[in-house]
Image (cartoon, rainbow, N blue to C red; front, side, top):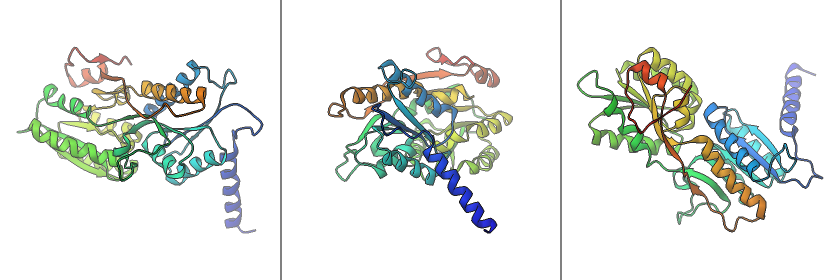
Amino acid sequence: MTNRNWAALLLSWLSLAFFTACTPSSDSDLPTVGFVDAFEDNTIEQAKDGFLAALKDNGFSEEEESLKVVYRNAQGDIPTLTQIVRYFISQEVDLMATSPSLSTITALQNTKDIPVFMMVSPTPELMKVVDQQGKAPENLFGVAENLNYIDTSFSIIPKLIEASGEELQIGLLYNQSEPQSVEAFNKLNELAEELDVRLIARPVNTTADVQLVTAALINEKIDAFFANPDNTIFGAFETILKSCNEANIPIFTSEAGLVDRGAVAAFGADIYQWGYQAGEQAAAFLKTGTTDNLQWEMVKLRKRVYNPESADRFGISIPDNYESIKR
C-alpha cells in the first residue's frame, strides 16, 4: 500500500472516530440535544454554558441522567460544520442548539424537521433565511438580536476620546461573507456621518487576514477601533487587541463578552444570558414535546459594561451608567 493510501485510510479512521464518539445510545429514552459551535471562542462558549444551565434548572442534565448532550465544534471549518449537522440529523437528535450564526444557517439549510434553537445569531432577516414572504423557517426557535443596539455602542466613542487630527477616525473590520457584518458596517457608516466622525473600514474574509488588515488600519492613524459583531472578529479578537494596545488605540464594541477580553466598553447582549434564554425555550420543548407555543425571540437582557483595566490604560472616564467587568 502506498503512503498516499495509508494517509487516506488514516484520515477515514480519524473522521469516523470524530463523528461516532459520544454517539447517542439507540436504546436510551433520554432526550438528546445536538449542540454545535462553529468555532472555538471564549466569548461564544458562554452561550453554551448558559444554555446548559437553563436546561439543568428545568430538570434536564447529564449529571442527573435526564438528558443526553452531544457536543461538536467545527473549529471554523465549514465542511466540518456541515458534517456535524448532518451527523446530528442521522442520529435523530430531539433538537439542535446552534451558536453562532454560521451554525444556525447550516442547520436550517439541512433540516426542516428538527427544531433549531439558535443563540448568538442575528434575526432571520439579517441571516437571509426568510422566505419570499419574509417568514422565518418553521423549525427555527431560540433567541436572536438585531442591530438597533449598535448605535449606542458606537455613539459613545466621540464622547469619550478626542481626535488626534482634524477629525475623529474610527477603524472597523467587517466580513463580506456574513450578511449581519455587512449590515452592521452599512449602519455604522451612516451613523458616522451623523456623528461627524470618519469611519475607516476594511473587509476581511478569514481570521488569517485580520492581523495584516488591522495593521493597515493602524497605519491610517485611527483614534479608536470598533469591534464589529461578527464571527471573524470573535475568532481573532486577541490579535486585534494586541495590535491596538501596542499602538495605544482603544477598542469599543457592542459585545459584552469582548469587554471581558479587553475592549474598553460596550452596550449589548450578555452572551451567557443569551444562551440561558434560548435554553429556557429548549426546556419548554423538551417538557411538552411540541413547539406549538414557541417562536424565536429577541434578546431580553442587554448591558452597559466597561473594562476598568482597559479604561485605565487609555485614561478614559466611563459614564456612571456603565457596569464594571471585574477581571
